[in-house]
Length: 220
Image (cartoon, rainbow, N blue to C red):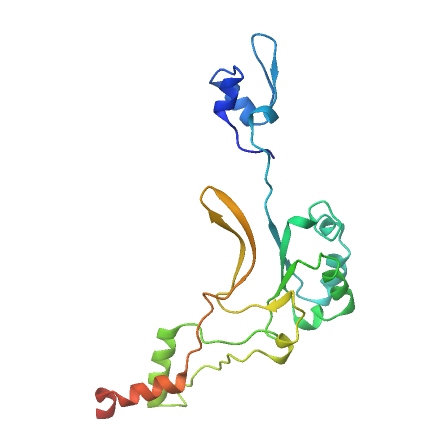
C-alpha cells in the first residue's frame, strides 16, 4: 500500500507524462533518460492507514478457543504494531460466551481505549422497529386483540447492559460509531458512540388512545 500519487511533484522531478506516471502510481520506480531513478516514495503522499474496527462472530463455545488463541489478532492487541489504529471491536456473540473467562481475557488483551460493542439479546432492548407498522398493528389490535396482538417490545435496558464496563455497550437500533469526522479536506479523528439516530420509544398505549379519539374510530 502507498499514499496518493502526486503528478505535479513527478513533473517537477522531470518525469514525463504517460506510462512512467502509471508505473510510479502503481509502486514501481522509473529510470529517466538522464539516468536518474525516481522512486514512488518521492512522488506520493505519506501513507495514512487511518483507524479500523474488527467484527467477531462466535456463535458457539466451540469457536472460543480458535478465536482467542489465534495469532491473527496480535497486531491489533495491546503492544501490537497496529494497536493504536483499532478503535472498536464488534462482538456478534451470545452473552454467556462473552462472560466466560477465556473470552473476557481475550477482550482485555486489547488496549483499554478500544471500545467493545455486544450484539446479543441478553444486553439489548427489544424496540419496535417501524412507527408506521406499529401504528397499523395498534389500530388492528383495537378491533381484535387476539387476532392482532401487539408485538412484544421493551425499551428498558436489561440489568446486564447497565453493568457493562465503561468501554463496552450493547447495540441499540440505529446506534452509530464515529471513526472520524471530515473537516474540509482533512480528516480530524473522532472516535466514539453517537446516539443521535437511536429511535425514540414508541408509546403503543398513546397511539391507541389517539386512534380512539378520532371521529372515524368513534363512529365504529
